[in-house]
Amino acid sequence: DNQITAHAIAKQAGIAEVRAQVLPQDKAAVVKELQQQGEIVGMVGDGINDAPALAQADVGLAIGTGTDVAIESADVVILQGSLLKVPEVIELSKATVINIKQNLIGAFFYNTFSIPVAAGLLYPLFGVLLNPMIAGAAMAMSSLTVVTNAKRLRWTKFGESK
Image 1: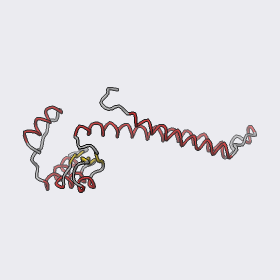
Image 2: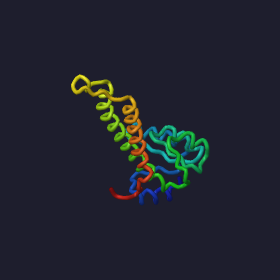
Image 3: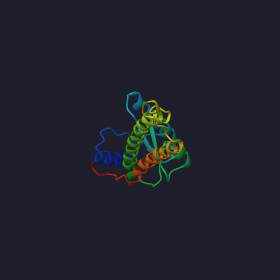
Image 4: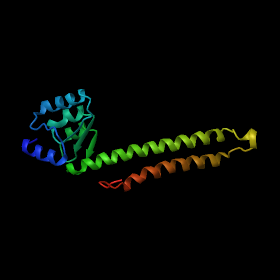
């Protein structure tokens, strides 16, 4: 919140516009103003004075060592008490969205193929019926595939160029 510190950090981060020493009641108004300009706003905070702005932001990130009010107002809580984790949170959220899309696409294709076969589509053509036990095992394998794909997020490397 300090003007000098804010400008020094903004310079290092390549941020052109800085608003520092904003009063608690005005933080949410600043967030709303940016949103009205068409910006997607992420707010990081840790105190009671940040809670309204965290709630107003498109994505509110609370530092886990902050107040309970800030933590309850935010969408995401960074458990470590460090702002250096914010880029990691952003990378992890992007990786999670990609993972969700992969799982949805996989499930769509699996079900597009499996449901008609299980319903007996191949019986008139080839006399093939799917044993319910095999259908259950196939469904379990589908779920296992989705879970395994999601668990890959545990090995996400942060800060590496892709």
